[in-house]
Length: 53
Image (cartoon, rainbow, N blue to C red; front, side, top):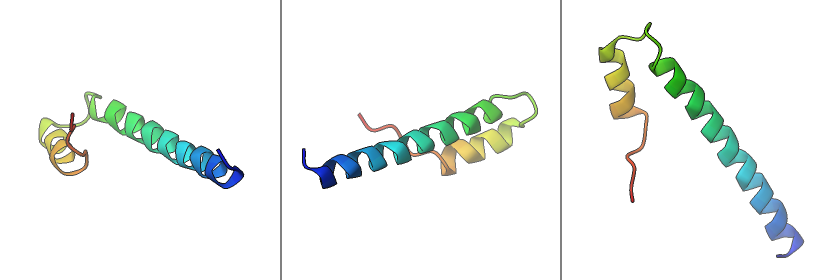
């Protein structure tokens, strides 16, 4: 891997890690008892991308 590709890889990895952590916090909040099922459903339908296998 060249230097530019290596730097891009680590930068891209850091962004993906931040995205993962932010989504993890959001999911933890949605699983709390203070969020109504209606609000949880709105988030699940509009915020999260579908899982594509």
